[in-house]
Amino acid sequence: MTNPADSIVTRLAAHAGMQHVPSPKAAVFQHRRFVDADLAAELIALIDADRRPSTIADDNGDAYFRTSETCDLAAHPPAVQRVETLLTALSGIDPAFGEPLQGQRYAEGQEFKPHTDYFTPGGRDFQKYCALSGNRTWTFMIYLNDVAAGGATRFKMLDKTFQPEMGKLLCWNNRLPDGSVNPATLHHGMKVRKGVKYVITKWYRERVWRG
Image (cartoon, rainbow, N blue to C red):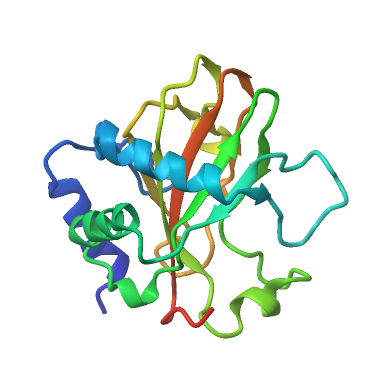
């Protein structure tokens, strides 16, 4: 039986401008200048208009684990629709499996300590977040601005660090070939040392998204 992730990997790898990051531990890709400056600016304005303190699943009691701000983007703004169209064309993943687009803002000193995007099977909040739509499969993250210092995304187990660059897409499969979660996708949104960092993130699920 063909692994559905294989067709996504093949499609991403064939896309002009896409770089398949070499690693036997996880499927990771990056694409510089995936979105243009005008679209990025529109998305930043949306994030700034409706941001709130970020939260985490399976809260470990560390108040400084995730110190960024989050914005749950509505589906109707033209900028959001443009990004959704771009991501669907790129990945071929049925948009019905996607969570709503989310924006994040990191001020100086803010970070998201090492974490995975999937929900840990057996974790305290696993049923709460996964009962309806299953676990997260793919992550697509776009940096919306250059950052003066800091703010990199570090995958320690892959020995890869990605610097924020306006318009750059970073995406990865959160699962192993057998469909189980992949611990090697543990990543750290490192502290912003100077300036502000904006990103948008799109997560896909195992089943149709039902909120």
